Length: 114
Length: 119
View 1 (tube, rainbow over the protein chains, first blue to last red):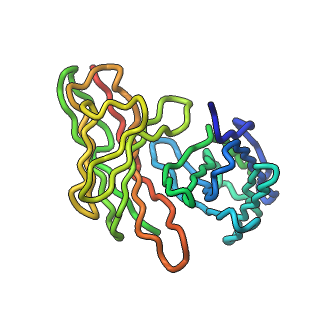
View 2 (tube, rainbow over the protein chains, first blue to last red):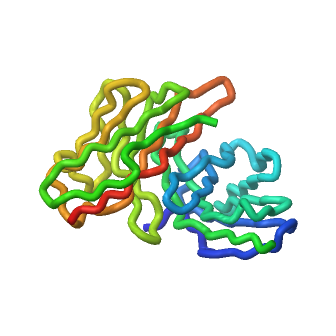
């Protein structure tokens, strides 16, 4: 049972435009969400997170939006740069329930076209 | 940002040997460390959670006698794959999480992983 889903395995975006990566979840106990970026043969790098008490969190070029009623979150990258090309994973946990375990999506490979 | 060092990055060994992987938090105290496994083209799957000074909590289906975890200090956790067999070949990644700070929850920070190949 895949509790965190990233339905787009890949996405190509022109440099300078906005990249939007989507993630859906099914477990209503999830209350803390994170986005990680991963290059081949490296571990995931933390990008940005959001708690369920918020619906938006912004950090530089990265903004995460959370729609709790739809159980959906998205990561916006603007403007997109060639160095953003990587695999992006969303992850969720139920911290408020004392569960630190991260459940990951299957990832979306983002390619920025120069 | 927070740095987590994982060593070795790549191991090739014969079937039946034991392999130890180290995970260190270099610039923060990790109250909790996590060990993940990733198969090709799949997501990261949590194997176990370890808190400093206590026994690790293993996920369902993970053999605790096969994958020994030691979290002896706030900056070091080790995963030992005992009597490794070809089916244990995989990419193992650790992560570390510090104490909850004044800004709220702390994210997990990951090492660069260890690619284990058992012949």
